[in-house]
Amino acid sequence: MTQVASLRSASLLKIVAVFVLALSGIVAAFATIAPSPETVLPGQQLLREPYPIDLQTALLPPPEAFVCESRFERGDSLNDLYARLGIGAVDGKRLTSFYAMHRLQIGTMVRAEVEPSGRFRTLSFLDGRGKVVRFTHSGEDIDVSLDDVHYDVATVARAGIIRSSLFAAADAADMPDSIAIQMADVFGGDIDFLRDLRKGDHFSVVYEMLYREGLAVRTGRVLAAEFVNKGKAFRAVFFATSDSGQGGYYAPDGKSMRKAFLRSPLEFSRISSRFGLRRHPLFNHWRAHTGVDYAAPTGTRIRATGDGVVDFAGRKGGYGNAVILRHGGQNSTLYGHMNHFARGIHRGARVAQGETIGYVGQTGWATGPHVHYEFRVGGVPRNPLTIALPAARPVPKGQMAAFRDQTAGYTAQLDLLSSTNLALLQ
Image 1 (cartoon, rainbow, N blue to C red):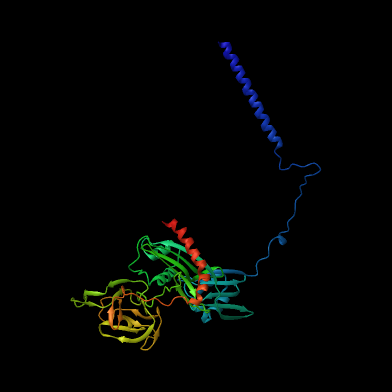
Image 2: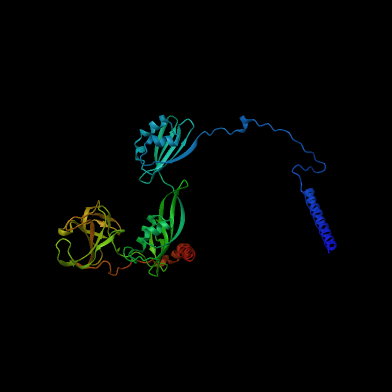
């Protein structure tokens, strides 16, 4: 038995030895095949020699000028800004002597081309009037000019879902508040954004973003939008009905989204008192409340809810400072408790829908800042929250073909947003 075991052990050792030798041969073969970094092919010769570099000619010459941008922050002095831009003290003092430099607003981006010596070549920024203020060093003189702004326009698409508020949904979708406000204006005739929003409502929107020199400056107009409220979808597209670019928002079938009247005289607020019978907060007895009160901070702008003519602007008993607008037919609207009137608001003045006519206050019989809004038909107050509002004119029949061509791309983008982005938000 011992001899058999010895023979088996010897055989096993032979097998292992053969396997090791074979593996070594494979490794050696691969080692022989693998090329060396310095492998020289037949007929070639490997040479090594230093290559001298002349640092004087190899280095790039210093720039004649460099471009720098910096934002004018709160708490900055002009000298702080000049230092960040690399502008020397001499040129900084000369720039400060110009009145135009003092129109620089907090948060404005300033761009300058500056030489290494600290002498600036150009300096420019956007002023509050939408003009480019440009300083140019011409010889020993400094020239100042006001130029029109030329923007690069890009189209942006976003989708969002309402979880708490419209603005919170806009933030979550990385969408500016100004676009949310525009969207509320577009659908304001069909959706009361103060009362009707529900958790789970959602929107898709295509809008313009304006760029200048590669930087986002501001938003443009909403081009197309869809808002689904309580399961009902509302869709609107912008269409220019004239060569001047003036136009409005229309449903896909060409019907105008604009109503003859807005539901509310304030863009966003809360209702503090509704239409109907109520206990008066000052006199503590029941009486008819002939309008709707919208609470808002003093100074909030009040909009005309429809095109009209100022029939009254002044002090009117318990209404305090009030404006009455006369509209087409038998319709009129009243706005009370104003802090003050907007410029140009006087009897006989014409106003357009959405135009500012005054500012929220608490004049007259008021316990806090708000606007009292009445909608009257033939002099009789009607509930502005429930009255049926007539629509504006649709797209003219002769322009329907152009309307479909111009808005087809926007509609396709809304379809894509609704079927893709929104699924990811659920």
